[in-house]
Length: 115
Length: 112
Image (cartoon, each protein chain N blue to C red):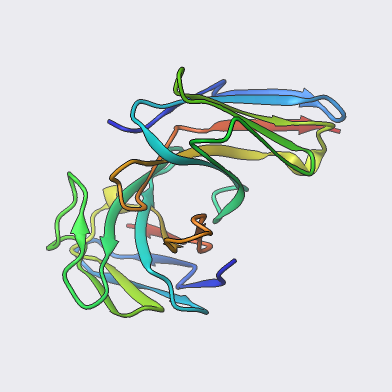
């Protein structure tokens, strides 16, 4: 399975500021995704990070709030912009490959608290 | 929504007992995956079952899939205190291009 490194692992941020979360994979992968897990809830898909083009966002998520970059097949960033306490969540990066193995693997997540 | 529903929401058992968790979903799928999450940390992949499979085993885990009922179950046999965690099912729907939709999860507590 792919080894996924996510940074930072946690952060406490002031409202109105922005935080960029990094996701690094130890091998090239076809697909990268970002998920959010609000306190006590399940995971919700934010967007698909597309290599070399704009991310594809799920309903309820917009680029201005969650800009995403994916400059190559091993790295992606998610920015949480103009944060409010409602953005306090765990943000998780996930990777998958199309082919024989289609399991999706997750990073350890970034626990964000907005005060 | 393509998200599934899991039951029970919480399950509490003694060590050595078996734990069964169920997951239902709404759309046609390529596969269904089960994950474990300890105390709000990252997700650990447990097992993937494809839409043309009916049962799969991995160690103490047994997963079944009934596509006619759009449901799956995860059985953990001879549970241990270390199995205490949240368990989620996630569906890879046809046409979803790898995007996963998660059930709400089952919180399993195994008492020593």
